[in-house]
Image 1: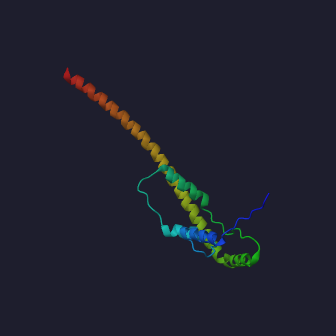
Image 2: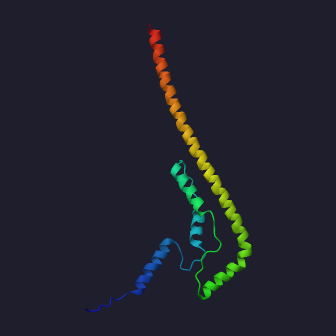
Image 3: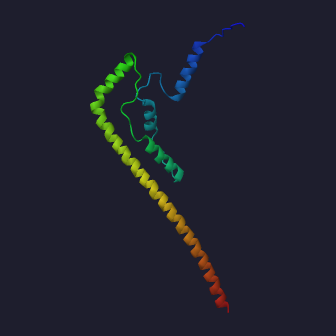
Length: 156
C-alpha cells in the first residue's frame, strides 16, 4: 500500500471558520463566563405571543423550573496561567457576587413557584370551563326539547 499524503489548505480552513464565526455574530475574542448566550437573550428581548397555548406555558414552566438555580462555582479546568487567573478572580469577587447570586436564586425560585401556581390555576380553570360548556350544551338541548313541547301544546 502506498501512503498518499493529501495536502491541507490551512488558510482555507481558517477562512471557513472565520466565516462561520461571523455568521453567528460572535467576534473572534475568546468568550468567558458564558457571555454570548446571555447577551443574545438580553438584546433580543421577549416577543409576546398573542395567543395562549397550554403546551407553551408548560414548556416555559418546565424550563424555568430546571434552570432557576444559578451555580456560582462552575468548573474551571486546571492548568495554565489563564485558569489560575480565573480562579483568583472568582475568589476575589465571591464576597460581593455570592450574596447577589443567592438573592437572584431566591427570586428565580419565587418566580418559578408563581409560574407553577399560574399553570395549575389555568389547568383548573380549563377543566371548569369544559364542564361549564358541557352543562351549557345539556341546557341548550333541554331548552330545545321544551320549546318543541311548547309548540306541540300550543298547536293543539
